Image 1 (cartoon, rainbow, N blue to C red):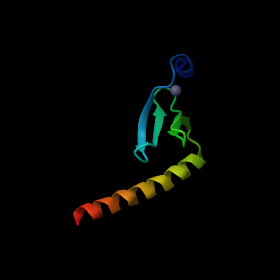
Image 2 (cartoon, rainbow, N blue to C red):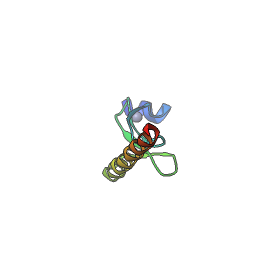
Image 3 (spheres, helix red, strand yellow):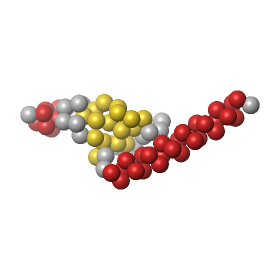
Length: 74
Ligand SMILES: [Zn+2]
């Protein structure tokens, strides 16, 4: 029935992880389907491959933020 609700009204996604400013991971509250933002800014099913890409993006993003705050501290 939960899946029926999703197919009727659409998934009820909540953000589970912020990868970068533009890329986030979401989980549907109804059916627990996980999705992520892809390169086109659209939602796509979160596959192990996407998780891998996101963890790399997250690392790059963190490093960038760190570097920026270092510059601001000077
Ligand atoms: Zn759903």
